[in-house]
Length: 135
Image: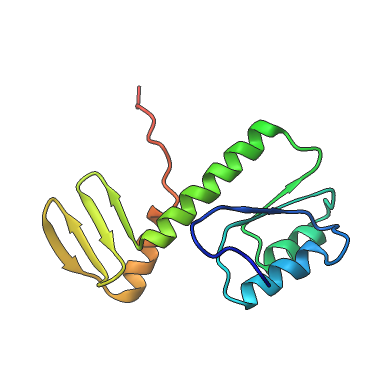
């Protein structure tokens, strides 16, 4: 499979394509080691279709008709997650989580975490939510 492997450009694929269906294409991409974020954009709307999409390796699944504002938001989220995953480090304020050595640094003080603790914290911080002012 000839795909560009540099950078984090997302791939938007339809399920119903002429030569190979999108489910098979994504499954083959993942088996070949390609990690680009994939958004399935399709008219297939059943939970079975969505399950097949996600289990084949898609990162997100959006059904037609598409709201362009939602598509832009989903692509931005895919790019954000891809950047976090490729960086192998998350920095939020004075807190740094470094996957290379499983360390957590807060205000210059660091500690090494157990692998499971690190992975749990890394996963949680990979999907940050905006803090709303409490009033």
